[in-house]
Image 1 (spheres, rainbow, N blue to C red):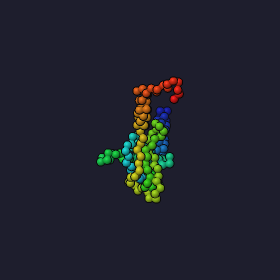
Image 2 (tube, one colour; image 1 turned 180 degrees about the vertical axis):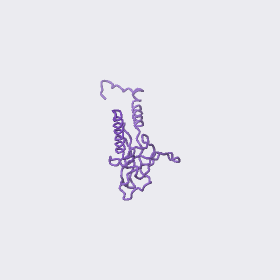
Image 3 (cartoon, rainbow, N blue to C red; image 1 turned 135 degrees about the vertical axis):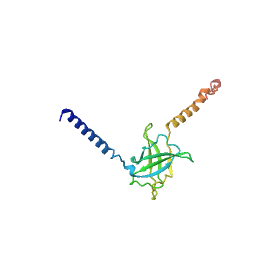
Image 4 (cartoon, rainbow, N blue to C red; image 1 turned 90 degrees about the vertical axis):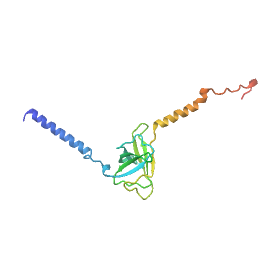
Length: 168
């Protein structure tokens, strides 16, 4: 075998090993939540949430957002989550849209309820809290600050000076 043929075989072998390692690391194209069950939740707004957004319980990932849609009648977004089969949530659990830090990525936080009955596949969360949008909070802070500073800008009323050296 010539030097070039050996290099080609070694290169092909390295590429094959690379492809196998990537396939193994990604679970063979499957992830644990794809084989799970789905639940839905209706929110007021879902800014920063997309298909693939993690769903967490007690800080551990238990699933992903598998669909984002809009209820045409109510004009409210609906998220569908795919959760691991082994995780069963009480019917009074809540789904909250949270973020990692001030400017971090969004995720869905599940707050488990205390009921004995669990949500069946395909059912919806009764309690859902929409995402908090940082821009809205900053806008409120600026507006409040402007309102408080307005009397100072317009000129505060002058205080009467005490007559004959009296102290007020």
